[in-house]
Length: 140
Image (cartoon, rainbow, N blue to C red; front, side):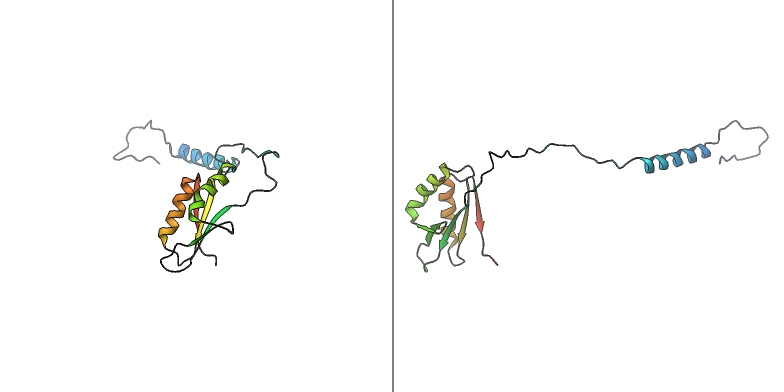
């Protein structure tokens, strides 16, 4: 409603816009309710692997285990349950990573093993050609 102050001796030529705003708000609400659900985002096509590229027998992951043999002694090393000496670790891993597409290795140590030896195993694995190295904890 429009409001005038004072005595109204002459006619006013102002347009009352209150009904117009009410109508616009009602139309806005109607269009918001009627519009179909709009899904935001881009549509993408995710490439699917071809049947040829999928390996039928994927290679087992490389797990380097450090077994504790007592205090102040270097732990025993195993690559996938096969014992390896510390000197032969890097050449053995280099040979393994040459034939693999994924160069991922996991290092698993006994809780009693000093972290110094775990860090050495990770460093040797990295120098042998591993792109990613994960640390495995004890399984619950």
